[in-house]
Amino acid sequence: MKPGAPPTDNTTAQPLRSDAERNRGRIIAAARTVFGRDGLNASMASVAREAGVGIATIFRRFPSKEELVAAVFSDRMDAYADAVAAALDDPDPWHGFTGYIETACAMQAADYGFADVLTMTFPTAKALEKRRDEAYEAMVRLIDRAKAAGRLREDFHPSDLVLIHMANAGVVNATGEAAPDAWRRVVALLIQSFEAPARGPLPDSPDHAALYKAMLRAGPADIPAAEPDGSD
Image 1 (cartoon, one colour):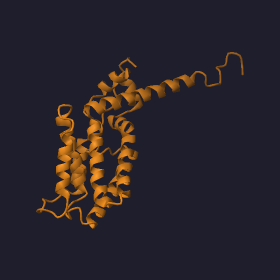
Image 2: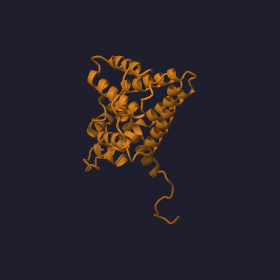
Image 3: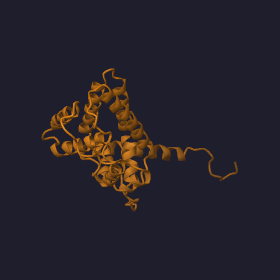
Image 4: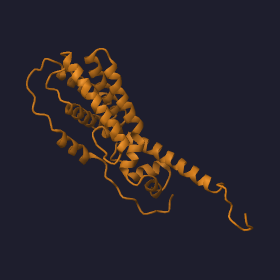
C-alpha cells in the first residue's frame, strides 16, 4: 500500500453497520411497544420517541409506515398461520374450528396493533401477505372440515372470518383496559351462532373484492420519507 493511501480494511465501516443494525432493532422494539399499546393509528413520531431516535432515522430504515408494520408483525403473522395449521391437526373438526377463532381473537386482544393488522392488507409487504394467504387457504379447509362434520352451518363463508376479526378488533379497541375480557363474551356468542343447524337465513356475505377494498382502505398511510431533523 502506498504511503498516505487510505486503509483497505473494514475497521471504520464495521461500527457503522453495527450502529445501523442496533438502531433498526431499537426501532422495531419501540414500534412493537407503541403499536401494541396504541394500535396502528399511532404516529411514527411516537415510535421515534419510544426508540430514542430522530424520525429521520426511522424513515431511512423504513421508508413507509407499511414497511415498519410488516417488520414488527411478521412473527405475529407466523404465529397466526401456525394456529390455523394446528387447528387443522385437531381430530375434532368443530373443536379445531372454534379453537382457531378463540386463539386468533385472543391474539388480537393481547396486541392492539395485531388486532388492526388482521383487519387490513399491506400490498407492498409481500412476505407478510404471503403468510396471510397461506393462513386463509388453511382456513378454507378448516371451514370445509367443520361443515363436512355437520357442526358448522352450511351458509358460513370464509369472508365471515374476516368479519369476525373486524368485529373483535372493534370490541378490543372500544373496551380496552376498562373491560379487557369483554371480547370473550362476544366471541362465544358468535361461535354459538355458527353452529349447525342454522336458525335462519343470513344476508349475503361481502364478495372478495369488496372485502379487500375495505381492508386496503383501513391500512396505514404510506407516509413518504421525512426531512432529516438533525436529531438522529
